[in-house]
Length: 170
Image (cartoon, rainbow, N blue to C red):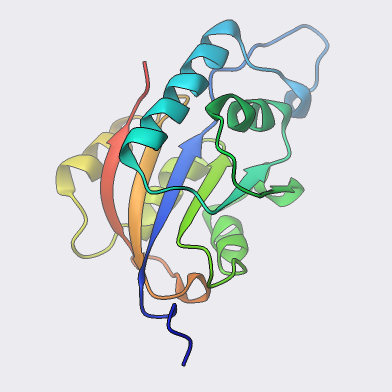
């Protein structure tokens, strides 16, 4: 048996930062607004201070998610996935299930309402009730949910993680 299969993993779910709405620009191509640039950098500061070092990133291919990730300064290897743009929570879980067992901390940068639905759907026994209530109320731009995942990524299922914390960088 691989020694990494039974260890606890960290899943970080981040919504993209505040985007702009330039005339004539398709949704997928919308860039960050000035506020989003600032808040994405604050999110990166929070991650460095409060989360384990990120080993890998799954990021939507949308311009605003790519720019959000860039502004966080997270140096991990990234997979930009078209499938995460407009994804369902099940689509995101399918992509997480493909992550290698050598990844202890995974960041997923995506969109609403998928990110909040995913965080709540994964939140199983042991999850912080107050944190789940915050996520259910509103998952603002740049917000970050941190979950603990027992075992390999390939085994992640609904209710299969513990929602530990939620932070909105402002």
